[in-house]
Image 1 (cartoon, rainbow, N blue to C red):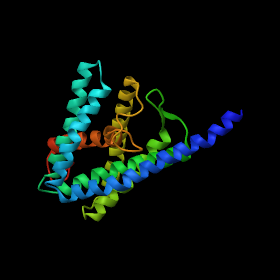
Image 2: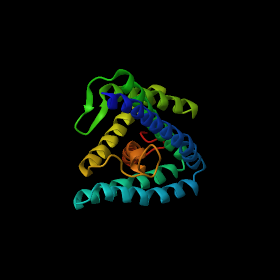
Image 3: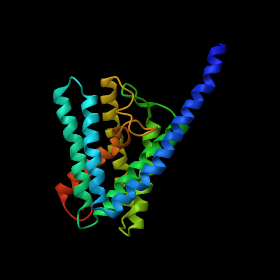
Image 4: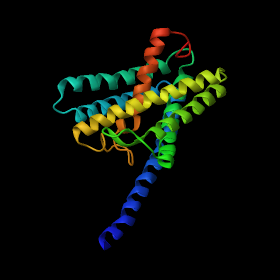
Amino acid sequence: MAASAADAPVGRLERHRGLLLRILSAVILGPLLLAAIWLGFPWIDLVAALAAPLMVSECIGLTRGQPVIRMLAVLYALAAVVALLWLRHQPALGRQTIVWIVLCIWATDTGAYVVGRAAGGAKLAPRISPSKTWSGLVGGMAWAAVASAAVGYAFGLGETVALAVIGAGLAVVGQIGDLLESAAKRGAGVKDSGTLIPGHGGLLDRVDGLVAVLVVVALVRLTVGGGWPWT
C-alpha cells in the first residue's frame, strides 16, 4: 500500500511532464508549420522533403514482417505528402485550403482530448485505442466545425454552415486516420511510431489524422475540380 501511495505522485508527475512536453512541442512546431504553409515555395516544399523520408521510415518500422501492408502504408504516407504540395500550390485558394485543413485537424485533436477527458463514456474502439471515446469524437467534430466555419469567415469564403458541416466530416476522417495508425502500432507492439517529437512520439503520431484528411481532400479536389476542394 505504501509503495502504491508513493507511486501515485510519480505517475501524476510523469503525466504532467508529458503534457508539458506536448504543449511546448506544439507551441514551437505549430507556428513554424503555419509559416511554411503561408509562405509556400520553397518552405512548404522543404517541410515535405523532410517529412517524407521520416514518415516512410516510421511506416517501415510499424510494418515489419508484413510486406504487402508495408507497401500500402508507404504509398499512403507518400500520397499525403504529394497531396500537401499539390493542394498548396494550386493557383486558386491553395494557401487557404491547407490552413483550413491543418486548423480543422488541430481543432479535432484538441476537442477530442478536452471533451473526451471531461465527459468520458463509451469507448470508440477499445481494441485499437482504449483511450478514445464517443464523446471525444463528438467533441472533435464540434470543435472542427467551429474551426472550419471560422476559417471560411476569416478568408471571406462564405457558406459558414456548409463549412461547419464539412469540418465535422473532416474530424471523422481524421479520427479514422488516427485509428489506422493506432492499429498499426498495436500490431507492431509499440506505443509510439518513433521518438522524433518530445511528448508526441514519432512524426506519424502527430500527423496521422492530417495524413488521412490530406488524401481525402485531394481525392475530392481531383474528382470534382474547382477552386475550393468541394466545388
